Length: 212
Image 1: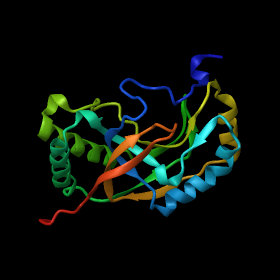
Image 2: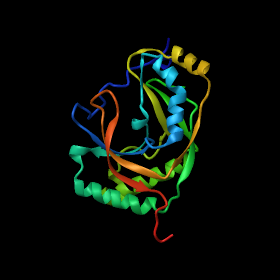
Image 3: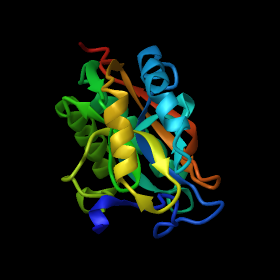
Image 4: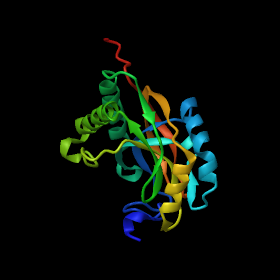
């Protein structure tokens, strides 16, 4: 069995992370979206039946978008200026609808691909421009390329073969949901309890331009 055919524990401590440390990042979140909740429910019997997976509750469902930095390294004044710059740029965009799913398995997760990716990428570009407006283009975290628009349904909590999960997904059938994106959230994210949990710092609306 090759490395590409195996799962690994998602909850290893990535560089910079430790218990008690949190991270400012922009995410799309879905706690109030009934279509996303139904999609989670569609896959819930499968996820609950696989002990090597940690399901993501609807409350913590998210689409990772653009990091800012660890909270102990970002001045609050800078953060406030980034939010205001993001409001200005995102106001020029419009809300849009994407499709989540069907689910597939990768090395650490069960994921729901998001399509089309283009409007999500446009929001991310606006967020990167907002950070650049405050810190300069050379200080924007993360690469502009390689963005994979997806929502994670469950995280792997141990090492093991991928094939049983792939088979369970195939047997379960495909499920999708159309969700509307009207805002993006700046969150204070932590992973102390083998889960991604957060407090919202700011919500930035799309298409909220008083000049339009």
